[in-house]
Length: 139
Image (cartoon, rainbow, N blue to C red; front, top):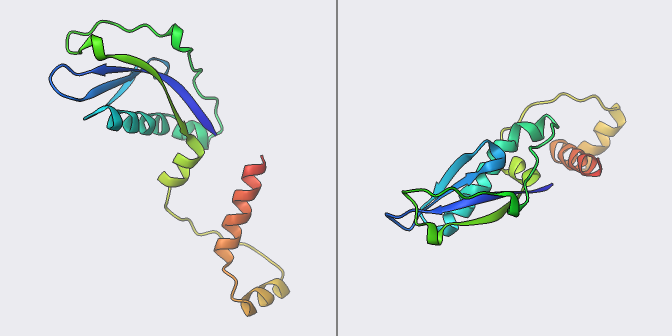
C-alpha cells in the first residue's frame, strides 16, 4: 500500500541539512544531514507514524494537496532553498521490514499431511508464512 504526504523541506542556514515538516501528521518533523538523507528520514517518519494504524487497519490521516500547503518563514532556514514536495512510501513493505520478531504458533493439521510433509522435508513455518502473505495480499 503506497501512501504519500506533502512535506516542507526547510533548508538549514548553518549546514547542508534539511528539517522536514509534515502538516498532515500534526506538524511532526524529522531531519537529514543533506537532501537525500532528509528524504529517507521523511519516508521513515511516515512509516513510523502510520505503523500502528496499519496494523490495526485504521484509516490514515488525509493527505493534503501541494497547493494547500503554506510555508511559514523561518529565521533558522534558508527560505530560498526551502521547498514543498510529496514524500511517498510503501507502508506494507515498511511494516514487513521493521517488524522482524517471530512468534510461535501451534497449528493443527491432519496426521497424514504431517507425515507427507515430513517425508518431503517441507518447512512448515515457511509454507505458512507464504500462505498467509498470499491470503493477506488478496484482501
